[in-house]
Image (tube, rainbow, N blue to C red; front, top):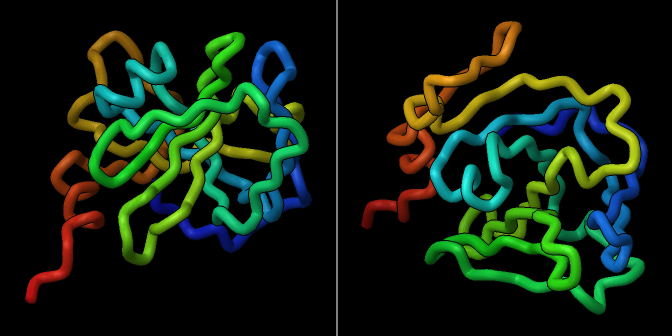
Length: 152
């Protein structure tokens, strides 16, 4: 997701379902975005709601069962190998988004004050659902342009 993290909150804690992976996120923004791409739908079992934090703001208190999967040439997914909980999406490609983490909203212990403001891959959204309220929407082509390598 690509929103500006201008309205950050305090630290937020979270975990996987079984509690084997616990983490603290610093400067969590007051907004979440929804991703409708096929990979996020497969990873989360539905729409993926994530909060964006820089890698330097992620601290794991316990991560013995944390597993990572390179889901594309430019990103990886983090999950608990014990309970299977989807935890985060991390940009691995070089560039301005490198090491950004997008932690699943459902993995946070407290989501108070976090509002849905953006939907990406809106042209890939299944017809069976829609969110109420007005959000900034971006298509697959618009998102891919953000991650395209610079032209030489």
